Length: 279
Image 1 (tube, rainbow, N blue to C red):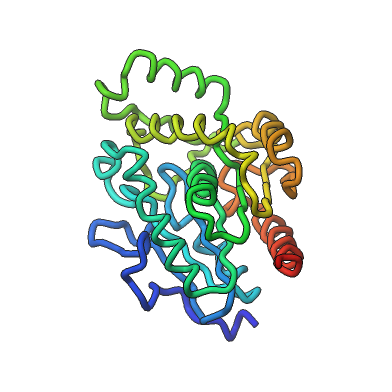
Image 2 (image 1 turned 120 degrees about the horizontal axis):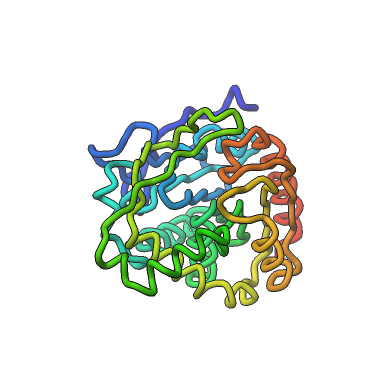
């Protein structure tokens, strides 16, 4: 089936919100779609300082399984950090409601999936715009590590995000000490949008119980960014019906993790079963 699938490309309708490319984007960060006019689509929303590159290979599994796929770009991402550093929550979120409404008119089923802070965006989207049929969360950033939560609290307490544009980003290194490259090689973290996303995660946490659509939740137990236990416990308490997948040894960016095939298999099986039971 995969051999007959259309190539990775931009959507025919480049006016779709979040799927327009501009000249400043790095090639690997360009938003993309895999479209063959199926009756269901999956929308993947990347995380903070991530990009559509996080889903570029992962999305092909969904294409092969019979879904159209849309991978938008969160505003400000994919080029120089200066394009991102002054954005507010409203500006980060702006393309997603109109995108979902447009896709709802085109498809029988629309499935929304968010990674990390993209999970915060996806959860907000489902609550704001009831056009999605399912919500899937990969390592959602409802809580960060204890040290990161403390740093975020200090930044907000002293208003540092209003005084300091960005801070140096620590290198990510593997167990062997080798540097792990990020998709856009950001060398700093812009504080204003980081605080905006952290604030939204705090606002959205108590509202998770209001989500009406079926929910899929996957988290790796080796995640050093969004801790496995605290996020799982939150989901268990507020959305006890969510289908939980424990990715053993899974790191933070699950679609590029060695366990990506396992995750996609479990997620696709859940989508098929869940869709069959929808009214």
